[in-house]
Length: 464
Image 1 (spheres, helix red, strand yellow):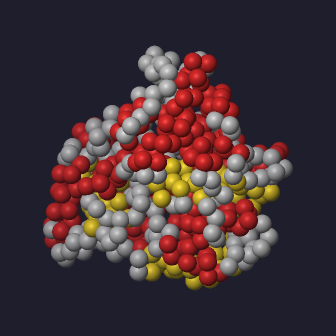
Image 2 (cartoon, one colour):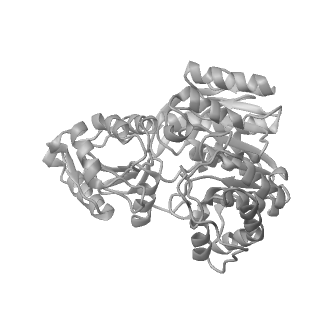
Image 3 (cartoon, helix red, strand yellow):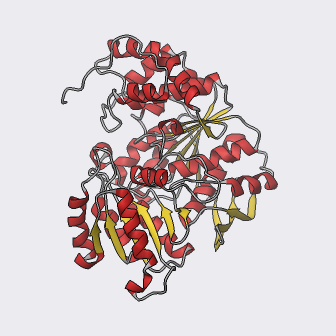
């Protein structure tokens, strides 16, 4: 492995949010993986194993983790339980990754959480072959902050994979596996079955395994793991699932069969069949955690109406409509494209896309091509971003020369797309019916969201 500068010697205490951010970012990046739980186990042991102080719902899967985590959190809080939530990556601000009672840590609390664990980070760094990574350090901060609060339940989303993910020092009462498709192939394996083997590692002895719909090959891997550890299996489409859904103004009406009861005509203020399925998984996960008593229908109804998922088909401006969606792999892009067709009547749709260079960007472009009239190719500000010029070359091969415009600056790209959407007659359509979809990466969407404050009250952002 190429040499990475070692973490600083001795504890490094911080005074400000920016100092915490700088200290964390000086560590190994999230994309640098060394498959071992040795460092995080050494870290959590020094912290007194805070992750054993509360019940845990642990989520993995290729898409939908953050949306489903937020839904589970909202349902638990509706039941008067104190929650911690850990999600990644963040949309706008690092502290979004660690939430208490549904709210990201304040800057002051984030500094405190860092300083609480700082005395132990250098002990781990000096005793291990490699220093703690950025992600491992933030996981330790989250688990300690949750114990300190204290929370009743922590809702924890894996960073990547499962077995070797730093979050997997928990023994969760409920393990949730959302749909598995190809993503992070260079880290997790070249087939969905390989990826499923890695993700199945969050299913622990005696737990509940809540399984979203999977391909038969993936389902077989997950069922084998659940059987091996004696987990109770509940499957979407069998023990629970969406009975019906109808698009509605501002979202959809859904009826869901839960594990203990059926819930009819719930208003879900999110768009797309995939969000209805995420909601069914969230409901089943909470039912699994809480045991035999059915949930109160009015509490469930109220919680559903509160569900939010920033950067997931989120409308942030009107005239023209601008929609943000963090789809960054073909599976996510297909779900987004289907939801656009299902929930909206935009014409034309102008895409703004900026991707990471290590993703299946060609698959993402192919998924969106039938649903976009024109594409403005751009890039976000991170080093991992693919250059707009390089992505533009690929996009022209998928969309054709006439349907692609390259604008490297994201703000300029959004402005150009908005002008194209408003000038609908350029495509032979009426003025004002057009919309802009900003997509391709959580970072691209986060940066766009910071530029365009959301419509109405600003709802807290968070993860992938």
